[in-house]
Image (tube, rainbow, N blue to C red; front, side, top):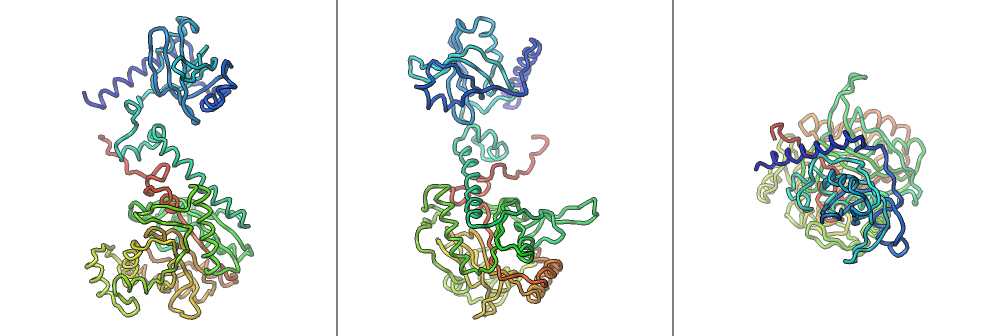
Length: 490
């Protein structure tokens, strides 16, 4: 039989049961339910609760009948427990009402805690009622969802059946709470800045564009977690601020890249990127230990020990070591030839020397295990970072390298308004030539810098750090990843 047809038959059967429940005058969807104990609480406190009357709520995950006695496996957020329904205790009419229940229905039930002859902690039900009727049957035979696409589309069902999927939601929340705890303990003030902007700044990425009807202007969803806004707070006199929020980038998808995701950024006045590296190492070790209970991880087939001494990688030297390309002496054609030999694909629209070097670096980065920091990045690749005094062609920037991937970026912020204006102009030229990831000229931000911003260190890290430490792809680690809608005919 066709799967959809079979499911429709089951749905119709459940709808008929729903009709009969309503016809009998009972409410299958009450506004609230009563509960005295969580299911796992009954299990862990059995010796104290044995013989006591309790009231529980939960979803029926298993239902089996043995004539005048039936058993239901019920699940709430804390765990599972068995319910025993006995016709002798309930009476015939109440016992018959159990036939209106299906797998997936929510139940409120009261009774005394006991242990069966088989040693199963259970509740001897004295009264019960339906508190939500499930019209669609749950995935067959408790195995949950097997199809990968369906898992992403129906994460709520995957979480219902998969302990690992449920644990991810809890761990993810713990990770960001630990991030928040660390930052506030270090004296940082949490702020929230605009998500809709007239100029998408603070990163090199293609933004999402939408229209603001009230103002009749096109606006952008932010591509950074308020970088240029948080630096305005430095101008305003704040010295330690951070934000945890959603950012949006209209770019490709991969096991590491998403279009909308959570990021944390902080800005710290009177501090540079050297001190920033020490702080970030301390932050990462704290997050790993508090969230996962270890400093050792496998990331992208690399064994990474955050407890080891963190190393530094020099951008140009590392590229030369791995590819024999001197980025200071090479040209675009030579870079294209090297990319072709290494079978590195790239977006040809607006492609230039800067993008070619960056593509080459990303190839090299995959071979570095870390933990470590990438330093000595050319000024062309970072329009918002302060130049190195000893070499003005490089910037005071670092990237965290873990398991061949970038896991955060920080730099001594550029606070020279004239230098910033010139770099924005160069970025705008790249945009005009077709590079959609080049940064926009933000006149308002330049004006803010002209009032004066103190020496500042800024840093940002996305949820890629969480997914990598958790051993998951970015999409697996998200609670509800974006999915392309199915064809209407499906």
